[in-house]
Image 1 (cartoon, rainbow, N blue to C red):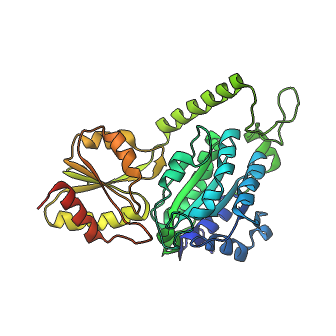
Image 2 (cartoon, helix red, strand yellow):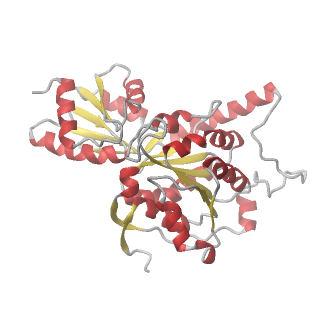
Image 3 (cartoon, rainbow, N blue to C red):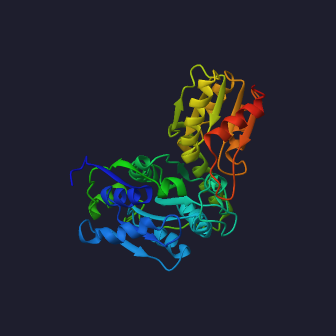
Length: 362
């Protein structure tokens, strides 16, 4: 297969193929709808025979996230994938990864909740991803793909960010993007790093040595309050640097917009059609799609708030991202929310009606 062949595959399958190609050293996961095709595709492709990539079905989501702690602690490119209830079980491990500054990739293909909920798609894990469900003051970088192509592209990008900043990264997808089939061009093969390259690139890893030749210790435990505060201050400084350097977003027809829709992932795809319908009626609406949910595009939304008459935060949930939109806007223009829950996917016409109703557009 040529590297630039255009293929037709599910989003979940694209993640698996991209992981093999981008030099992933290990995948540890557990089946759960609607993301099980990630593990199934990896098992079918047998990358341990070609690239040496380890693929292991763990006994639980708790086990898989702790396997990331061990593998990532040696400087390896490791990842897991799950869906909403499974990622909820991983929260303790994620905060351990953040506290120990271990790079890793967690993929969440969201489904409806709370609790076991439904296997239908949702965007109800926005808070879980951007606020963190574990203890302490920590962040993870969150990328929100809106296409099968981005499901493939963001795997390598997530790893690059994870190792650049020594931070866990998350791809926050959903059951629509995970299960839908689209054309995709897979990334070129990237060779896995040698042990010597890992030692050189990750001097902090447990396989490395400190200047006095002592073995590195990977831990998030610190019993001395002053030392723990210093570590927290270091983390907060790193997070501020990420907020300055790594915001990613996409804009559509915002230059002349009187109204703005903010939407991510599959909701942004629906919003694009809504904008076409509104524009056909002479209502000038633009779209801002946050690609990074953390760091959030606060500054750009604040700029657009001075231009538009109102902003609609469209999410497939009860209203989570809208809180970040309101914080960015700081009262400069009205902000409303529209969404559905329980696995119901809104139609473009419903979004059109919501924007008109909230801003009294006849």
